[in-house]
Every structure is written in C-alpha cells, then in structure tokens.
Length: 373
Ligand code: NDP
Image (cartoon, rainbow, N blue to C red):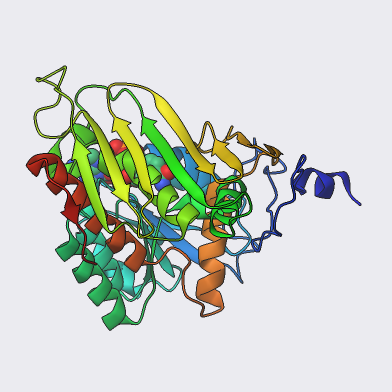
C-alpha cells in the first residue's frame, strides 16, 4: 500500500469502531505553494460559489475546496472588491464567476455554478438562500439556518419550489469522532446514556456582528451552543420534548446589550434524560461527555476543526487529522450527484432553530418550555 494511503487510514485504539460510510479524503494539497488552477480536472465536479468571504470561507471552506473530489470552488459573491481581486488571483476564478450582492441574482444564468454556499452573518442566511434557490441552484447554508422558524419555512419552501436541495453546514456530521459518539450513543455500545454534559464557549471580542442581534439573531447559543444541542440530538438519536434555561447576570453590560453573555440550559429527552449544556462569549470551554449505564464516552476538545480528542471507559478514540470541511463538501456534493437526501437537511436546521427559540423562551420566562416541532 502507498504510504499516503496508510496515512489516510483510521487508527483506533482499544475499542472497535463502525466502518465510516464516508471515504477519507486526501489530507493535504500536494503542492500548497502552487497557484491553484481550479478550472482543470473539474469536469465531473459540481461548481460551488461561496457567498460572503469572511473568516470561515477564507480560512476553512476555500482551502477545503482545493481537496475535494466531487465539487470545486467555481465562483464567489462578495461585497468587498479587494477580496474579489485577491480570490480571483489566488484561486484562478474567472471574472464571469465573480458576483457582488447587487448582481447576485444573475448567477441564475451561470452554468458553472451548481451550488451556492451562504456564509454570511446569520440574519442574512434566509434572504441569500432564497435568492439562491430562485436562481435555480442547490443551497448550502451555514448554521444557524436562520434567525426564526418562519425564515426556515420560507427557505424550505423556496428550495422545494425550485426543486433544489437545502443543506446546513453541520460539519461535525462528517467528522469521525462525532460519527463515533453518535454510534456509541445510538447503538448503546456502552449501555444507555444516563447523563450528558456539554459546553462550547469562547471570549468574543467587542464590535463583531456576533454581538449585534440584528445580524446574529442571538448570542453564543446560536453560534456555539448549537453544537452542544446538535451533539445531544445525534448521540441520543432523539429530540428534546422540553427545555429549561438560565442566564447568569451579565458581567459586561456595554458589550452584551442585545445578546446573552452566558447561558445554561437543560434539554429534557423523551426517556427522561436531562442533558445539561452551557455556552458563553466570556469564557473558554469545548467539551462533550456522556455517562452511560456501563461506562462513559467523551470528546474534549469536542467542536473545533481539528485537534479533537476522544476517550471512553473502554479506551481511546483516535483518528488521523483530516479536513472536516472537505468531507462535508464532498458528502453534500455526492448526495446531490446521486440524487440522495442530505444527511444535514434544511429540516434539521429548522428543528434546531425551534429548539433554540424554546431555549430563549425558557431563559426569558424562567419556565419549562415544551417543544412542538
Ligand atoms: P465573518 O464576519 O468572518 O464573515 C462574514 C462575511 O459576510 C464578511 O466578511 C462579509 O464578506 C460578509 N458580510 C456581508 N454583509 C455583512 C455585514 N453586514 N456584516 C458583516 N459581514 C458581512 O463571519 P464568519 O465567516 O465567522 O461567519 C459567517 C457564517 O458562518 C455565520 O453564519 C457563522 O455562524 C458561520 N460559521 C460556521 C462555522 C462552522 O464551523 N460551520 C464556523 C464559523 C462561522 P464580504 O466582505 O465578502 O462581503
């Protein structure tokens, strides 16, 4: 076997893991210093246009699209002309595939673009996803799907009317550590889950759109807590029937005018399990742990792009480094090519927005809120 193939294999210590259904991808570009020619060898790949060239698109998605086998970076949509110039040069993007927010709708006439990936601030997700669907393109929208259930419904309706798919950028559904805790939990490998604790937090700098409710729709719950919420759902294979939530007193009233600073919440699952979660923009944390009737499993750090570490009462979980985003993008492109449903569909994004709304309602009212989907 070629040494590179060996480096792509999964190494698992001490416990057995289920076979992953998603193939492992090459981990690096062969020649990272080389100017990238994205037009060559792309005949059988779906063309993706990224909308909003911020940190995530620049630091993660565009590099991942240099590794993908089923899709490639075909175009960009940006409000910043200097970014258009830099990206055009760096990724060899033809001028005809570069759009502003003003001429975005004319993307409908561009056959190079099959999928539009919306990577804008949360409150812009709905409008740009709906415009993408109306342009006759498949849509990938970043998390959280939108800032209200009504927006989610409108996005789903627009994609349905256009006959196009809508996926949410839930990268961890393509990450082997998370696929493994999903298997451990859902298949009860270490018994029934009896407790879950999860948190995801970072210290947010002042002045960013994430602190402006008009653009974010909410605070760390929408941005980071959503990962804990997701992990509870995919490790249990259930959705909560009710939630409770508490927001501790704000420590910086100037910084946290419109959104919560820290939030503790509890998700009541159908069998009675209470999953306890916490998120904050004023502290650092990044973990998921489940206690089970026969042991425990955890990932810590849990939710980053790399450096995840998994452990169970039966031993370590260990995988080689890989690009979550490349696996996510290829997984989504493959499902479109094969006419299969997305594993992270808009309906899942909508479900999470419903849970988030219930958590906010519980935070404000101080009461247990039952959830209707
Ligand atoms: P950034 O602030 O880094 O980038 C957002 C980009 O959106 C800007 O650079 C800009 O791009 C464009 N934009 C258009 N209008 C505005 C506006 N009014 N204010 C600010 N930006 C605007 O954000 P991120 O890249 O970190 O996040 C973007 C989305 O991706 C969010 O929904 C976030 O939740 C999600 N995300 C998902 C991650 C994941 O792991 N799945 C990780 C990080 C973020 P331009 O200059 O090109 O117009």
